Length: 71
Image (cartoon, rainbow, N blue to C red; front, side, top):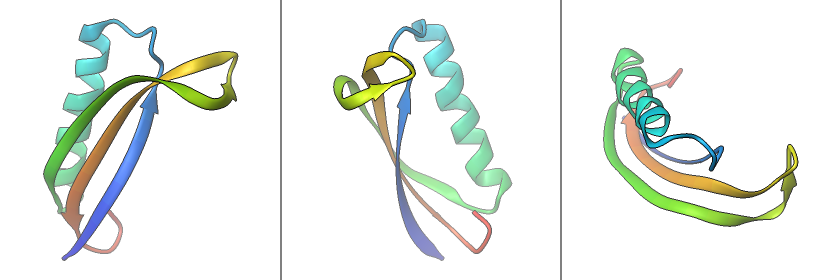
């Protein structure tokens, strides 16, 4: 198995419930593809290096997970 690291940026205006829903979907998706989540590191809202979709801030989350091929 290979170890992967991914940083995702979520809309900072999402409600906590919606943000938690995204985390739950990630927790479900990785095992469905034959992998497992090692760590979900919540970095919180931070300023973006440049504007994306008229947003200057983003909610950062870092994932570490292990998996095979298509993951």
